[in-house]
Length: 562
Image (cartoon, rainbow, N blue to C red):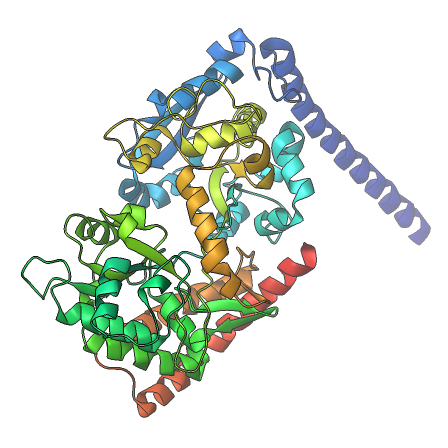
């Protein structure tokens, strides 16, 4: 009897396995047949990246709805020349629904929660790792990595750049979003210190500063904190711009906690590679600068400059646009932090580039920003989209460097010359009179998913002149002062448990640090007792050690998978 039952069970198991196998084959056959139909009926092809993706019938009968936020200065994506050119070259018709960034922020959760009325994809999605995991587990997002055979450009990137693949791959081993990759070596160093050389020359003539001469006032000048303080004091107390007032000079200015031109390099005077998150990787270890006693010393030093009106107090409140506006016209800035003087002031020829200031203990370094050159979560596609292979092949074209350049800066004919240069590279047209480089770009470029790395800059597209200037200045006067072994925190993939820890504690930690730091900087510094209480709170109620442990574990996984 037992033998008979065993035989029955074995037969049942065999039938079950056979059934499962047939079901799987049917599913594969179904997917294959859908692609076959796209090929036979609509001329769908993905292998030749320079040929149309669909035939004329496909262009008429297949379309996609893509939802995207856009910059207020940008024209509607449906009207952008680059989008119209993409339709001409691919025969893939896209209907764009553009909204403002604020509207997208308000509608984001509603879009993901409404299964009956979703677009096919979201461009400029701004998806965090936590959001991607949440919606992937609910089967809301398409696992893009299941369709890589239809994306030759993107597949090649993943093969050649395991670091990019590591930053995209979720805990379940799949990729659910498309990235933006713009590698120029700019973003990790967002600050360059500029000095008004005309004002400095007056201070030297007045014997108000020690140890430098007028001959020293050239790009690359190195100043100690003491010399900078002497210069700023002279700027504060004199009518430097000759308008009859001594209260409109701004000895040192920046935009507090801005993504560029911020205060972080001032902490380099004390050997700290600070950034807006106060988190940096040193010799493979995730560290927080706010746990270093040098941070207290630096904060008190900077607070003293603020109290004595050497640092313009408006710097702690001003927006980026206000900072740029008040730099125009009559000169008001003595020292300021930004990427280029040409953007900030009306007379950039009056300003020279300084190396990082040398602190009172002889330290000279600069910040290492966590601004990512590889941005994940830029585009997501919803599960169940019809003809999704076509949409993925269409997005794959964005990763062609020639297309990437136009997505990022604007199209051939408007931003780039029709003819390539002698090296076969895109070259920018002369800028229209009365239109800034930023305005021209924002009006005509959707930005978003691109791949511009070393190959593109060396073989496909010439960098903007201002980008070249930034790199030259950074290479000469800034990045040599970043210690070996100090790197930004890259985009990291977290487990669900780790994400829960971050979501529970990190926001409160950041608020606690921000609240205390601005109070100290604006009110004369931090006392020993307050610093001690701050350190206890960091490791206690704000759970910094747990958060740091999460980043370290994710970073270790990232480095092991590269």
